[in-house]
Length: 126
Image (cartoon, one colour):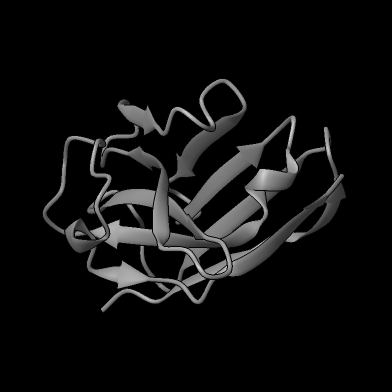
C-alpha cells in the first residue's frame, strides 16, 4: 500500500507559477510509474502528465506541454509538478497517482493507476 500526499497548491495570478509535491509515505517511488491528473468542478478527472519508473520518459497533455514539468526524486520519495505560465483554465484539484504495472511513462487513463492522493487545489485568477 502506498499513501500519497500532495502539497503546494494555492491561489496564483495568471502567468504565475506553482510547484506541487507528492510524497509517498515510507517508500521510494522507483517501483512505480507516476502521474498527475486534475479535476475541475463538474468535469471528469483529466490526465496532465506522467513519468516512467526510471524517470527518463515523460508524457504531457497538449494543454500543458511546454508549461508544466514533471520530475521525481527517488531518494526523497517525492514527485513534483512545476507549473509555469498558469492560466485560469488550469484551475482544478490536482491529484498524483502511482501505478504498479504501468512502465512506459505514457499512462493517461485513471484506470492505469493503483494509488491516489487526496488532491490539492490550484486556483488561477485572471
